[in-house]
Length: 400
Image (cartoon, rainbow, N blue to C red; front, side, top):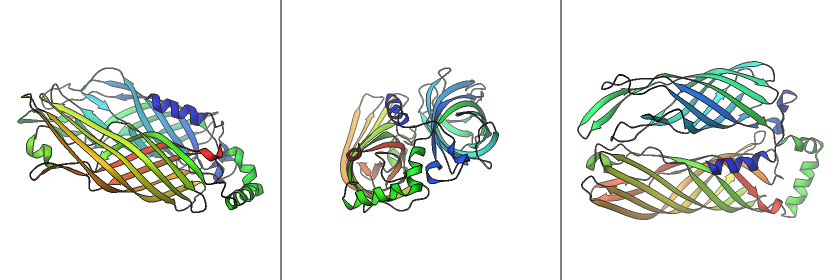
């Protein structure tokens, strides 16, 4: 969490307050950063084996997002900071999008609809920590006062009932509340508007073309940001050997670092990256830890430019190290190791109002489809993962 605050202290040091898109719809007004807090309320719910298994829960989240398409969309992540009490249920980082039929404007009330991806943990006594993936439907109202967004929201969460092992050979039904409610406050920032006059006058193009011809826009780069990863496929290690354990579904939040070089004329990024990705679970005296570390080289090309929204696509090649540990209730400790060279797909987008900036915000995803660790004959543990780096700070060192 300290990493997140450090990153966004740096990010916010280069931005100014604005709601500039109400004046005109230009590329420098396409997106704005927002940062704030949200308080959520989860009603109590029960199960087939305990009527009031889950008590009321109040949770506080850090909200990091950005309004896009001139106030018609808000893409966000909600990072849990703390909750009112220890319970069997713990929400994880949520990623989502809200859409506004009427754009957000100062001193006006605006409705929204949205959808998100919300993982959560459930654990009962010494049973397994079960990770569930849900797709909540969002709705609510936003009111903007000056540069503050005030939000009141409600969420409908389908598929609230699931099965849970309360013993090594016993399955019970658990239900979670289908609704939750939230209230939040966010501050909006705009870091690109100052470059608009030069863009409109043609100075930006002249300077870009001149520096490009001198190869002065090529640059060494450093990127850093928080990431998480979804397991891409189920494997039979647990289902065959330890059926009372759940499958690993999502990793902890981890920092991603990269160092590379940007080629301006080709609009191409080449970089070396490193990620250390870990998950753990325990049940009925059994502890299991899965680790994947990946030094890799990757390259991707920027494909288009829609008002400063610039998607990219490429590939990576990594040398992957795997480690799986099973600490059994009997005291036996099993360790499985492996390594392999694996390709991956790389894709995402930059927010890039012009090509002269020394700092960009990037969203990147990676998918490695074939990472597997064989543990016993005919049995394996899958390390295939979709890595999600929702927001990364990228610095072009030669431009500072």
